[in-house]
Length: 127
Image (cartoon, rainbow, N blue to C red):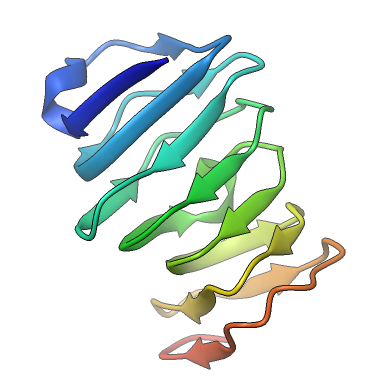
């Protein structure tokens, strides 16, 4: 497990993750790959902007995880106990948990995973 309270602590290079990466807040512009998982910790906002291929899933313990494009969330399931904000793309990941989904931006977001999250959905913009 590698824990970073702020994304800036991770530098600017690609991250090949075969374990658990825990990040609290900030802009995570690094590209994430590997079989490992991403855990969003704390109450702040963490923004993912890379075209990520990690497959170990994403867990949102608290706060807000923002992905301008669905591709930033990798390929694994998303367990959400906070807020997941997504701008556009095809979200094939399975969404579960008590957290909410917020559609942001002007683009189109398509949900195609088998979802059973219970926190509700808000559409701020786009389709």
